[in-house]
Image 1 (cartoon, rainbow, N blue to C red):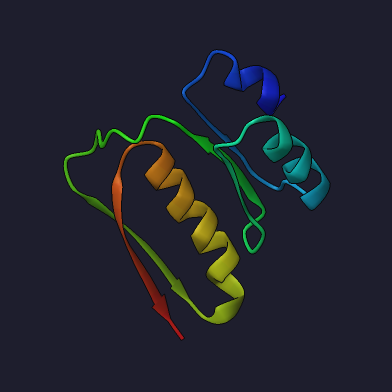
Image 2: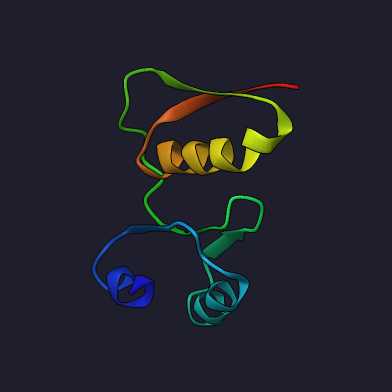
Amino acid sequence: IALRLSDNARNVLTTRADVRAAEMLMSRIPEAEYFPRSRVLRIWRDKTVHGKGKVAVVCAGTTDIPVAEEAKLTVETMGNEYDFIVDI
């Protein structure tokens, strides 16, 4: 699905991606990135900032870091700046 989406979309964000899917996509699309901690697979071609401020991504505790990283990558890929705050 991500491969087909990348034909027409500048940015593609896939969540809950496993390593096998990530390796397959990265072998076909050089700019694809995989973040194993959050299991996010991203093709980020348009890095234009669209937001008018920063989004705070906040988590408390190490077990929340993967979800917070997924949120951070989503915010960034959608064209926003962020502050990443981890209270551990």
